[in-house]
Amino acid sequence: MERAMYFLDQKDMPTHWYNIIPDLPEPLPPLVHPATKEPLPKEGPLPPPLFTDSVNKQEFSQERYIEIPDEVLEAYRTYRPTVLHRAFRLEKALDTPAKIFYKYEGTSQAGSHKPNTAIAQAYYAKKEGVKRLTTETGAGQWGSALAFGCAFFGLECKVYMVRVSYNQKPYRRILMETWGAQAVPSPSPDTEVGRRFLAENPEHTGSLGIAISEACEDAYANDDTKYTIGSVVNHVLLHQTIIGEETRKQMEMADAYPDIIVGCIGGGSNFAGQFLPWIRDKLSGKKPDMRIICVEPYAAPTLTKGPYAWDYGDIAGLAPIVRMYTLGHDFIPPPVHAGGLRYHGMAPIICHLYKLGFVEAQAVHQVATFEAGVTFARTEGIITAPEPCHDLRVAIDEALKCKESGESKTILIAHSGHGHFDLAAYDEYLSGRLQDYEYPEEKVKEALKNLPEVPAF
Image (cartoon, rainbow, N blue to C red; front, side):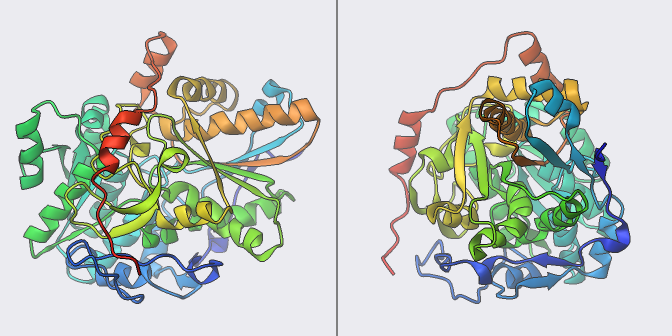
């Protein structure tokens, strides 16, 4: 019988991150300065004082492979390489000829893929003499990971957590605080942006756009502080490619190659980390028919419903303007449990590849995703976070299509993390209280009226 788990020895871990920028068939649109509305130089940097100099350079780098510092690799080795699984029990339950694999990132200390970039960003900050980092977090995975990374390198950390998730997931806050971070619900009374939204609505549920603005404002106001982000931007996707680089070696061990790669997208870092090292085969013509399916919530369907437009990355317009599929920077999404997928925009790299037709996108409802999560738990034994339950839903659907057609396709799932802090959401599903949210078309139309005017160039 074929192996069910594929382990990579630590001595065989990738030593470089893969940068897709030089391999793109068309260059990315430039970033635009939020104040001047002028394009930023191709070599950067991003408007200060947001990021450290090191990640600023990586954001605009044209190097195909960027070496992972020894100190970062040492920290990675506390939880990496992660395991590639063959989902035999799921295949049997579905009675499908498809071969299903999943790369499981839930075994990190923070329970997700997020430490792959949190460790790197904390390391570069420490190296440059930064004392304190700020950030936003949706469901709490990123905030937890950054708190963990800061603990490794002795940095202070403040996390602005979207209020609805702060209330839904108290154990994420406790995790951050245990690692020494300060976590506050966003909008908060700690920033001008937060106070403005609280004045309008003291019970505001928050959004990633608001939390990003608060974290950016905090960084601007303190000389010893830099801002960090857990998704969307190029350098974060770069750091996550260790996932796909490991998986390529493990799939070779399994003598398998994916026909379909499935992953969830909110800002895009988890799935991009898996598929970018594979899509170079599609771009080069080596595997032109490989399908890469991005899965998003129907309540916040950025790629499937949003226009491709210039928009701010945050609600206050402090972050650079990017060309992306967007629902409008002041869009407030419904309170679905997949808090990490409630962002109004998407990684420019993913948007670019989607526009060029190299990846596809599907939107799914909340109840159906938890149905898939329960099926996965009862076959593979893993309680999955609400976010990757989205890709489980589509992977199961694709496997059932193989059952109907008799085709034996190989499906690779980017499984971003466990759902041990999301059991309240599972309780809602199991008790029949979980509800779907319709696409908030009117709210999106209203938010899209406020897109920034950017000159043609």
